Image (tube, rainbow, N blue to C red; front, side, top):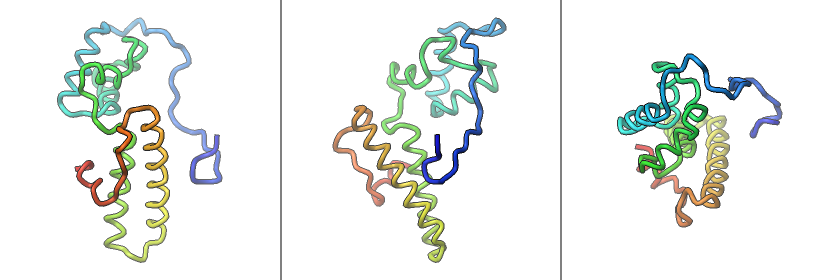
Length: 151
């Protein structure tokens, strides 16, 4: 699979374990894991940060394997999921930081390309989330008003 905005075909990155079985050394029950996820979500952590904390601090390699539900599904069931999906919010924050950089460095044309690529990714994701009904149909990405979401 080729990368989105380059001619390369990078395949590096972390991989999940091949075996889809619960580890014998894992001592947490599904209910306990759900309680941990809810506790961390109430502290304001995102789904990816919750996964990292569970992996690093509690030794839970894969929440979905043990509990049968992903972290985001658990958060949605308990009404703790964010209004804007996490990946979209990360792209919006990236766009804002690049725009701040461009205000200070007006001659940086590489940053201009970065903004264009990031915003095309945002528009594609918004289109997908509207189809999947995770965003309202009237939600619109506007550069001026979007700063309110990211802060």
